[in-house]
Image (cartoon, rainbow, N blue to C red; front, top):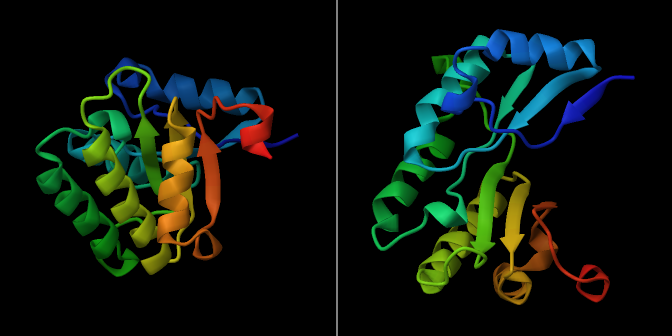
Length: 172
């Protein structure tokens, strides 16, 4: 059986020394593809480097993770959008397969809820504009996420939830 890891951050520092072994080990266990979400501006280069080194195995997503949102989110959001807008295979840049990892996370801290909503909704619009699925991270924020999705237009969006911790009723 061939499997796909639909969400992994194997470009992060923990894997730098043994990334070849990590990928080969996964393949030996049947995992042949890796969908790789971005976290913030600092992870763009390592994410793209990994996906360019392993173009048949690693497929990049571009987004600003909710726990990376703070009061200076605007600059990061602009850089993330540039990445999405400039992805062009003619120039050696990989196409992103999704807008992600995006969402709202109130588990650790509620300080930047307003900013997280602004950032999430903007990235949902990108998902529509670029015709890409959204990879949505929601933790202790299900009502807020659903409110934002409804505001932007649920019928125009597609994608998956990651880190969903809601109830059966919320899922339904």
